[in-house]
Image 1 (cartoon, helix red, strand yellow):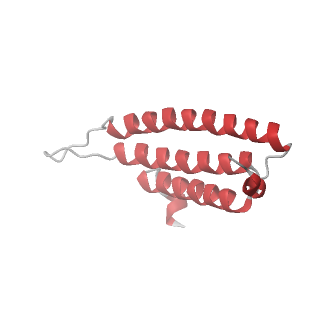
Image 2 (cartoon, helix red, strand yellow):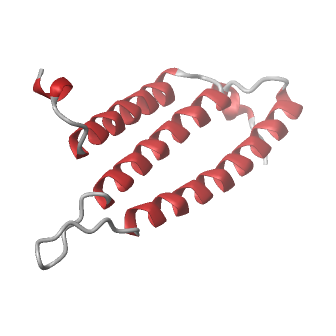
Amino acid sequence: MELLTAPIGVTHYLVVGAILFVCGVVCMAVKRNAIGILIGIELVLNAANVNLVAFSSATVNRHGLFTPGLDGRLFALFVMILAAAEAAVALAIALRYYNSFATIDVDRGDDLKG
């Protein structure tokens, strides 16, 4: 219960990141269509972003002073750019798959022929 009454710190952000990560993994494991799996992947990437920003906000320099760094925020921005590119490619593949099979069920992926 101390977590709920304490001032907001790094631990709170790490808990939110862990919850997002677990939700993303469960979504990827349970969903059978490509869009649901893509949403799960995005949740996992956003959990990583939350953790990167949380860790970058708690940096201490060599003199023992608190200095907010931009490293984690820049990595989070890079991950967001990669996630946008990944989503565009995955949606294009899902659209092509839907045009071929009239479904986005990933279990039908065995039917693909080269």
